[in-house]
Figure 1: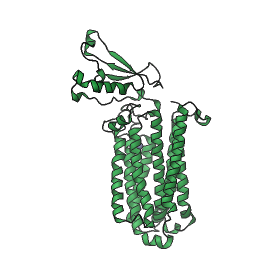
Figure 2: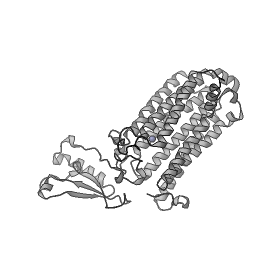
Figure 3: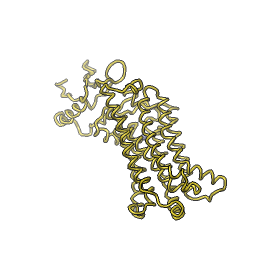
Figure 4: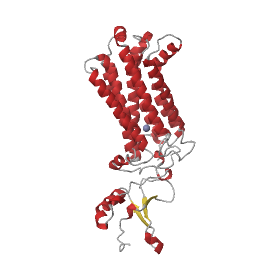
Length: 408
Ligand SMILES: [Zn+2]
């Protein structure tokens, strides 16, 4: 073996699961197997057992040894991918059978993995690229609207900021979720927090620009944003809590998480539903804004359907692992829906300006930018609380309330 100068077999080896039964353990036992050509002469296969950090060390050694053993540069192999039985239960996705990244990757591995095809690649890019589309739209608006001193534009500013933040946070969550089981949960805590802030942004823009005329200056309008703020805290808390329930009762977890997002959606969309119902009864003029709002609603329902149904991968498990699974379609549908929503909000904001200012007055700082700041701080506190509970559980001092609900 040494005589053959093949001391660094990592490029040609395959990763295999350690242990003969059970899943991954806290000790992170893994084996690296190398099938030597010498095996045909009765040597090998050769097994290396890697402990925590072993893979990184071995990779470093291999990189340093590349010159010494004369490996050609094109033999730099991508990190191995795993099938569903080789990763912890917590990161397994319904009907996604392969293409999982190493669940204990480094941050750099995670960033580099976004250029490798695995079952999260499209999830990362379907929210990363739209982020820059929304940033570009915001930049264009900044050049033609006076966000600094025109209070009428503040609800739009809050909304535009949040539609840039939520896809970016989601993209980061999908990128860095492969660092550990705890990181996996914490990444999605942030994802849920950003989504619930986005729902607050929708409420702020709808409450100021989309309200039907008969609701302007009503008690409902005055309480619309404060209630939406409470909804966003409820949404983040319930969706984060649903991750604790997931391994104990996946069905219940899915119901909780869906409810966490559907409740604020229904509340935020009430003014829009009312305007559409009025229009259906002939009580309004059909506008470009209303068409965009209707397209948005179609995509919002499609997004919810894709999130809950896990179609198409449920029909053919393993067939859509890399391309076309429901989470990718869910991302695309959410972004297209957000695009139409933004067009609807912009059209309403520009076309109703004088009427809304005459009848409702300018938006207040407190319930636009102030509400955003309050929502941001309180949501971060909730995420911090759930992250703390998760790490506390890892250290063995876990509150009784969650004890029965978490297994990994
Ligand atoms: Zn996602």
